Length: 326
Image (cartoon, rainbow, N blue to C red; front, top):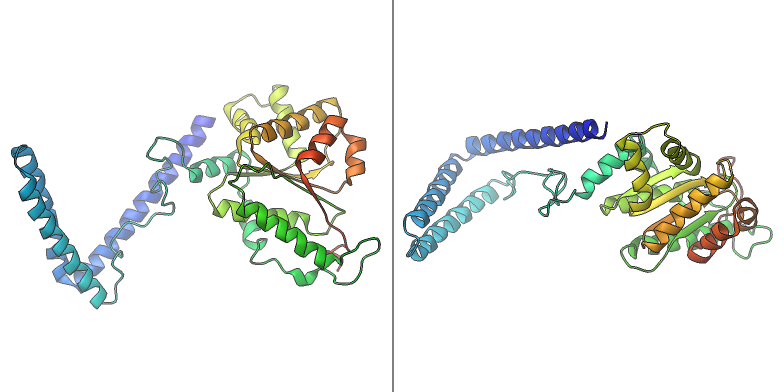
């Protein structure tokens, strides 16, 4: 099944390149029709390039002078072309290929042969059926974040108002994103009751890091444990399952939402510790969102899970009135 997904994704990349090439041809024909002289310039550039290549092959010992002259001719033709385009209010790169991903030129692979992050993220989306995440992130991101929805009145038992507290939390989140590539051991723990903006801010962070070409896996604790159980007990023994499992450890950022909603037992506690601990050791960053308080986390999970989360995560408390009712 993994091979089927790879074939399907590769075909989509191929179609994308074909579409871009067709669009480029249309732009070229438009320019040739509008500025006929540019067709002649492109033909002269092609002739000079072919002539230069032939001269190098035919005169391997004394081609430098001829090549320099050919390069000067080509450069002069390019300058003339750029001038004609600018004079007609057409951008100089209008006839070039345009890629969605400038890192791999929409091939899915870097020059080193490694998978580009755009391909990795596409595989993440397929593996986790996260096709709906894109529409969610278009609605829930830092551009749509509105601090005014948070109450600015004193909240019982807290020094800051919910709005002041959220300003601080957003500052932590922005610092987390800015310093994401640093080996600083930063992980975040969002905790507080429902309806306080935890999931919204998780989406903001996910969107910001996806825009930086990072691999982000965003799942509920329940879904993650379902993946672990299917793999461990052979309910879904295929390469996609293995790929899903490995991403929990290898993704640049793992967001575990709703920790505590899953069934707690020896297996789940051990698996959560394994994921969190392995990511900490390897320097991979994790964000956990939960409706539980630290005290409740300590009561549900083992001491080593609790201590690992409290020692290696920055706890950020969300409080205030339920925004959904507000």
